[in-house]
Amino acid sequence: MPHGPLSLPARLCLLAWDTDPARLSALVRAGALAELARRGLLTDDDGIATPVDLDSRTGDPVLDGLLELITESFPHRWRVWVTLHARHTLDAVREQLVAEGALRAEKHRVLGVFPSVEHVLADTARADALRREVRRVLDGSASAESVPEPTAAALALAAAAGLPKPLDGPARHRHAEALIRRAGASAPGFEPILRELCAGLADGAPLASLTRGR
Figure 1: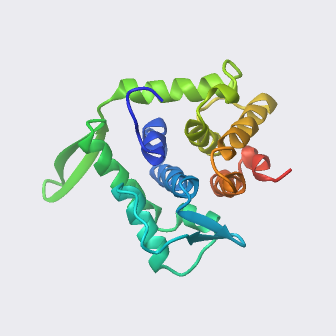
Figure 2 (figure 1 turned 180 degrees about the vertical axis):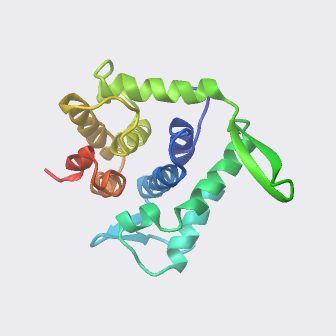
């Protein structure tokens, strides 16, 4: 991705910034889960997202916050974690993006009394670049093999969430499947985890077929 290193959940937050908040929360959470799994800090234990080392940390407050939440919570399957308390991860990512200048936090009062903060997209160039990249791969202009493996994970999750619109059809499904395979090559055992996360995002959507193993 252009414009310097962004975490996987941060990339997805910018990519899907105009998406419904509940859907955005799930996508960002799926990105954080994928990043932890890709780094080997979360593993799959018979379908359960399981910390590898209870004391492991990444140095990224978003990822470390989620890792701590999973460590201290009752065990859940990957699909459950896509939405469970997902707003916490989105809030942490937004704070991170504000610090990096990609978002702007504007304070105001609701009804002139209650303080509130509205987040506004400040770095539209970076968000537009992310959208262009996912379109190039899903419409076949660029091959999945030409995309770095971590980036392929972001694009696969975005595709599972139905982004960007209005791309659809068999070709999109085929290219998204290639992204899942490309991203899966980044770490042992990562592909089935990514498929589970895509399933959590695509639940009931046309792209749900991508989450089935071969």
